[in-house]
Length: 66
View 1: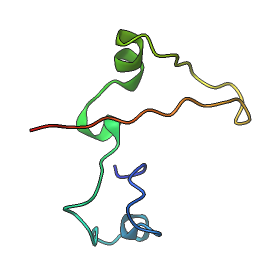
View 2: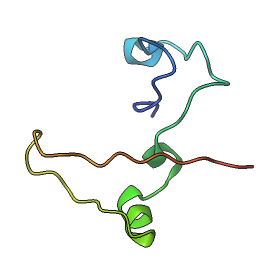
View 3: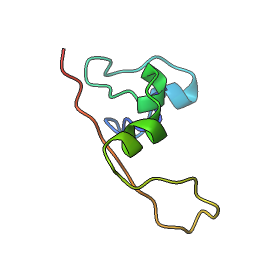
């Protein structure tokens, strides 16, 4: 899933097409098997399931190093 990628203004994947920038694409945590809740809690970051779409959200990023 590239749902959180945001490299392109409009994702080709959402139209059923292949990514036009595969070398720049940024996969979502969950698409590579990372448990976001467990990882955030491990580092003492606040995270909880939102009960209403108007609740404040916590946004997290990661840098993957080969």
